[in-house]
Image (cartoon, rainbow, N blue to C red; front, side, top):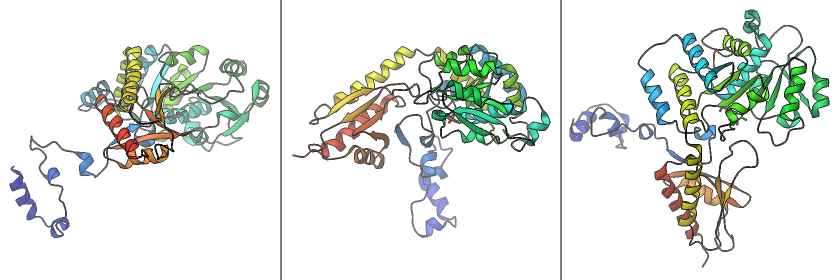
Length: 404
Ligand SMILES: *Cc1c(COP(=O)(O)O)cnc(C)c1O
């Protein structure tokens, strides 16, 4: 259909938009026309964003690898038995991660709930049905004071009490017959109980441990480290640096606990995990993401990140008083290089916050961080063609602010 014909057709439709002469979504009416590719961002008027903030959920995490999209597309045309898929994907993932058992969850957050549920109910169908309101005393989960995190709601939603402890002696004292699990936040700023002591104390009292390492690759070795240390369960996000589906994650470790977690999960209807569904494509996609991540040349990828930082720094070289610094976070989460850009605000008269604001409201919209007097640019999620665009926009904004 020629565009003129399409417009003609449109004009006979009783569209309110036509009457007031507003811009009609002509493109969307000519889909199927080979020359015009459907643009869903336009169709819903949603602004695509260049992400220089990192793998954060509010910016939709990370982009899925081509291998993941291939898995999703390739498996979308058939039906499967979801029990079989979860079991077989889990077996393969467990093999890859050198542990007893594994499952794909709805992110690390979903894994936290299923892990907690598993330690409360085991394979008891009645308890699974009653969760989170079991009769009797509330189950307790041990957590270090410094390990409280914004995600601990995903543990509390199983109807447990979080028991905060500080130091090994307090942990040991806190354990009682209601204790179901000991939760460890791997990337916490400080640990009053070391990984090793935590595992040893829990083991001694037969309390299962869960380590939340959601954002803790790279390095790739971390995918193996914590089960080797003796944690009974470990979780990683699928949608962060593993570049899997944003709504998927991994829970792995002890076989009996993974079995119990599966019983608390969809596709079982009367379960706490029923609302944490991961579709079959994303289960395949999560498997494909893990496989691709394990096979990746991590040194080469790291070098590419450093090269991007160098490139952006070089493009900004002419701006007076400007300094670019490659920074690594202190902790184990998001442990990859980014760049801090700073300047003398007497000479370049814009705050890092306002520079970030200008990047965000410009075209294309670029989301960057600002902290401690510096503009922070995360380069790990940039497509190659975005690097120059980001550099150009920063240059433009800062050059306009130079006081002469
Ligand atoms: C991101 C994150 C989560 C949640 O992971 P999702 O995969 O988004 O569900 C949980 N814990 C920590 C420490 C995280 O960084």
